[in-house]
Length: 277
Image 1 (cartoon, helix red, strand yellow):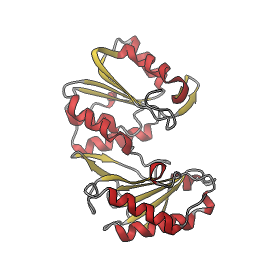
Image 2 (image 1 turned 45 degrees about the horizontal axis):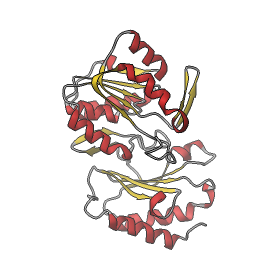
Image 3 (image 1 turned 180 degrees about the vertical axis):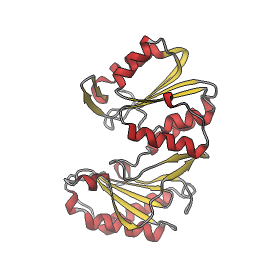
Image 4 (image 1 turned 30 degrees about the vertical axis):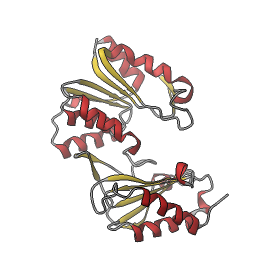
């Protein structure tokens, strides 16, 4: 049953109070302010990137939600100092630009954030997500703490944040692999923001299955391989099915990991428990 604007604002306030001490207004941080799946409105997620608020609406009837979403926006504009822009992303809109996001308040949108003293380039209107997944913050911190001097392969890299964290750690070499060259350009921008050196050959644009086969044939070995695939995808070279066939992708990359190396495999299937995964 749909909640009222007043009920939503109460839940947003409870969530904000629970983050006391985490939120640093008018900073370059990125923080999830509301996780509706666990905090009382399952189809809504709210994240802050610097001074830009991003509201993700996953309701399947988005045209009926605008009053509720604006009520949420009004709450944050009053409760969180320094917000300069608000974007609403409507996952199931029939209009493509609304899925990528509509700027509904303010002007300039943030293009970078800082996490654990590392800069990450972002493009909040490039895709239906925010170009940086806040769920993997702990994985990035782990990379910073463990990958000094290591050789790293970041598969399904998207905008390369896990690889950026590995570079920040002082990894000896980091390969960023993604199908989309446009996403990898944002990874290069993150390198520039941090002053990281890199070789163009370390950015591998192309199909996961094709590149993994090529790396195997050339005898490449890595100290760490990140496996962070989309929930589901099909190409002419192979299928990605996180919920039912995660083991297939794991077995694809295992031969690339040297003895005593790490495989960091991330579960993006919301309804698959950690135990089952």
